[in-house]
Every structure is written in C-alpha cells, then in structure tokens.
Image (cartoon, rainbow, N blue to C red; front, side, top):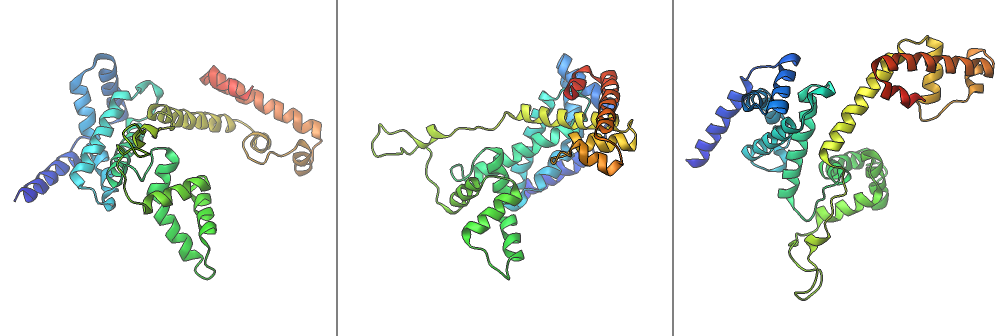
Length: 292
C-alpha cells in the first residue's frame, strides 16, 4: 500500500513539473539576477520550478542502473538547485545549458555511490568508464567477432574509443569485477593501520571550474567563427589551415594550392589576423589577445 502511494505521489509530482511554465530568455535572466543579487527566494522558486522537467528528464536516463526513480529525481533536483545557486547570468548563456551539467553530475555521483563506493572512482576519466565501459566493450566484441581480440587488445580498443588511459580501463575492470571492502577497514592488520578511506583523493577539477571553462570555450568558439565569417574564402582557408587544425600546413603548401608565392600567403595571413583582431576587439579585447 505504501509503495503504491509513493508511486502515485511521484506521478503527481512529475505531471505537475511537466505543466510548469516555459521561461523565455529575458524572464530567465531577470529571475537569475534577482536571486544572485537580492537572494529573492520567490525568483529562485520560479526558476527551479520551470526547469524541474529538465531534472526529471535527466534522472529518467539513469533508471537502468537500478536506483529508485524517486531518489534519482531527488538527486537531480539537488543538482538543479546547485546550478541555480552558482549560475552567473552575466556570462550570456541560458540557465538550462548551465544546469544540465550540474544535474547530470549530481545523478551520476549518486548512482556511483550506490553501485559501490569502493569499486568506482570520482575523476572524469573514471566516470566516463563507469557509464560507458560495458556498452563500448559489447560493441567492440560484436564488431570483432570474426577475429576475436585478446584481453589486452580489447582494453586498448576501449581506451581509444572512450578517450581514457589504458591503465584506467584496467583499473575500472578490476573494480567492477571485484568485491566490496569497507572503506573503514585498515590496509594492514592492527588498529594502527591507515584506513582505505584516508587514501582516496579526488583529483578532478571543481565542478564550477569545469562548467565555467566549458561555457567560456564555447563562447570563444562562437566569437572566432563570427570573426572568420568576415574573411574572404582564401583568407579563411589560410587561417583555418594555419591555426585551427591539428596538422598545421606550411606557407609553401598553401601557396602551391592557391597559386601564390610563400611571401604572398604570409601577407594574406597577416591581413586576415588583423581583420579578426579588429572584429574581436570590438567584442572583447581579452579575446583578441588570444590571436596575438
């Protein structure tokens, strides 16, 4: 009976969240400023209520890990509130863009804590492995069924596809296949031994720093794309080939492609940077310095 009542309550909460107002950008910014500058709780409540549907949607994506949906929603809500508390409306991005990271991080941390506090980790590499290891491994094994890989080859493929070090793949496989040990247990016999919990260190950047860095990088990319749009096709090719690619092309190779001398390509490159710098200075002198 209690379980049925709880499920019914969850459904009512979800329906209520889905009926909440949709905020336009101006209203959202006004509410965020009111909370940040005046600690207006009514503004905070309105902002949180409007985006609770986002938290519920994100929480539902983690149901396959076996956690109760109401607890996932609760953790997602905590992430949403953290986002609202730390959001800077002057950065020029929508609150939903900022909040998604906090909501996902909060739910992921909850899932990992409840799966096993010992067997999983807290760095970004370990999180990527925890939530993608089995899926990527299954796909690699399926694709290589005609020529099965040995354990080392399989781990190398997994590391390459997820983009993490091989050592992290080996460690995570061991953790997920091992048994739990109390973090309060000592590493060596005797009461004087150091406990395992004393050895745990979170080397990941702080969440606020990571979100700010991601937002700033995306904004910088938009600025650069807008500055590139003001160049001629030839100038854009030169800039992209010289500054915006991993394999930087030489002035000679660009000259051969464009039918120009090396010196002429250099002149066009310098002129293009000048145009971009002037455009960026009109938007932000700080960003223009990145082209210096």
